[in-house]
Length: 311
Image 1 (cartoon, rainbow, N blue to C red):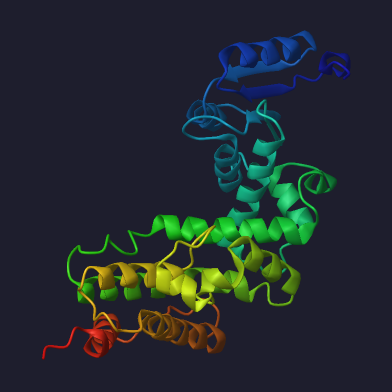
Image 2: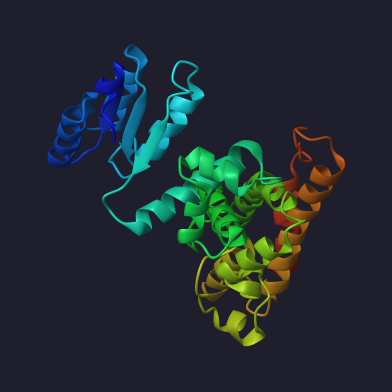
């Protein structure tokens, strides 16, 4: 690396790293090379410095408590004052952290701009890595996008209130109504990402396998459902609802002969039926308003068919 002093240029570098000793060593090395260096130890301090001083380069650790390197990059790109400052993301934690950074970056892009047309170069540019680096951590583009899609779905699910309480809590009708309302919201938020990838069936196939295949979508052997066994891997809405209904059935709050698998399929089918046509046939960006009172009416209709019968 040639010294900036050799070209009479004062290059200002901001280093953010939560390990104080490592941050100071990086700063000292850059100063010895002739750079003007400021060192901070957390993401908040880095953003504060960047708001009040001009830097030619920012070096950020991807793993930090609070605001991490990925979030520092996102906020700097959103600020007109700092959006053109080159940011180099690094990690002392190894390949796993870099892989997670790439997945998180791709998932954020899906959330912000959709999945249609999302290219490797877009992800690499946003993650501040060379295009070819992605292939050091993923089999191919489809592998990265499938993991990003899973992270996007997990983020949406994680931002929601609890989909269902433990069995025996509240009333079954209230719980089903809340599940339907939240299911409609979840599907409305994640479906556009899937729609944008319809032209890339390999991505959707990879995702399907990652979430447990058919079992995650309620397609599982009858003996598995009857036993109430937990499916391995991430749980989709059908699996979640069926498990809840089986637990309520064991408590006697649902008829002992009721077909909870069919009830679950009915509810999930209505959720899909309400969301998908609106997304397909409405102009992009159209608010998706659902029929008033749908969740409560559907929950009651289901319970009228599966509630315990008195002699």
